[in-house]
Length: 224
Figure 1 (spheres, rainbow, N blue to C red):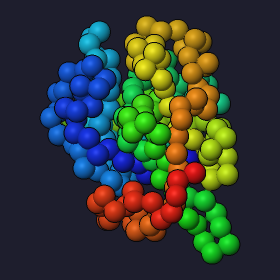
Figure 2 (figure 1 turned 30 degrees about the vertical axis):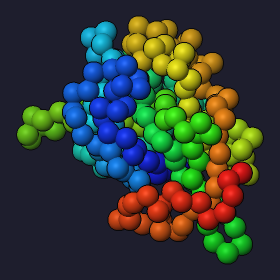
Figure 3 (figure 1 turned 180 degrees about the vertical axis):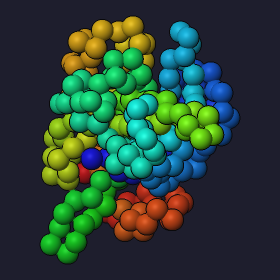
């Protein structure tokens, strides 16, 4: 599961990195992104790569209300193509969710220790994401929501947690984003990342969604 991550860069900075057009001009300085909050995403819109802001927690278009979104923050790679909740989005509504890093909690005798996992080179990670457009019947407003695809852990993560976000390399971004890509070709991308990551324990202050700030990602000791 991926339940918290960081988006310290602004939408315009992510737009530069992902060679996209920024349509929101916002975000940034988010050190403790939590479910149901607005997150920066990259989508393909009419053959143009765009940076937008969606609500984290996918709400299927057929859902009666928003409550399902708080539970659907992650989609399992093993079942994403067949799940009634995610299969429609997997076929035609895929996005990238850029992040500087993410948090996971390791079970320990004294409780759960939070770890921060980030790229060794300091560049943003691109999580494989799915999105959906949900229409609120009383108001007529459309809300776009998203979910992060997760898979089995790589070597680094295996000792911390049993899931890891699917992290896509730059050469896979276009294939993932373009809706015309045959979903059958995407299975090979839904695997543990080859990216070089580092992980280190951080303060338990991250446990509270109310806490923000650079101190949340400061290591308690040397990175793994």
